[in-house]
Length: 271
Image 1 (cartoon, rainbow, N blue to C red):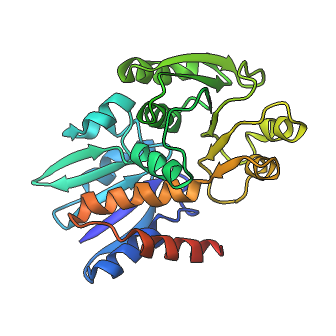
Image 2 (image 1 turned 135 degrees about the horizontal axis):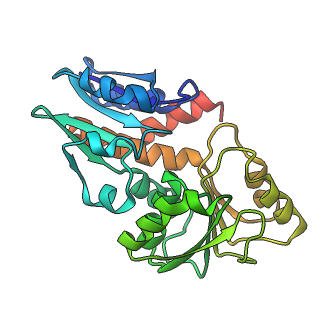
């Protein structure tokens, strides 16, 4: 059986290492998983080319939202978030799922973050920010602040917030109104949050916990500043690991070998 991760750019993806490690641990000798460069324009043709020998696809930027009209079904969480990072093929149909949200929750739980934070600040307003919002709800929080550069581009986030039943306040990216959030979640690329790293280093914005979805390069300037300040830091790798484990379970029907996947991923990162 075949599986792959699609996105653009995709060359940096660690997903093949994680999924192939899972197949090996599960004894699935006939399974393969590769990274395929694919943008929005080429996604319909790529999906159409997946025949009965395909188990599923992982999706990363910029495909998590544009895939929705191309699916035959979507799990309730994906519908609430408005994004799917997984497509499972079965009986000639395409079934969409969101494993980003449980991946975030599991990654935070490993660091001891299991209850609702007093306040939440999310950096960014894209598809990953929507998943972050759902994860925040999963922790029991009812509201969050999102720092965005363009309010118009946050329409999807606001729509997700309404579906999720979470109150969201937008604030300019360069002027956050939350002084010291209980949980800071950065969903922006490496380097984009350097302003917050500087504030954290000065002591102007010191959260109790930080989740930075970047896993390479690591640590980001934000994560390094947080670690130096004694903040509990959750990186993008454990989130990637747990969302991949969810995908493996969906595509293979077997429980994912998380520790084998973790070992392989950390080795690939040189950690």
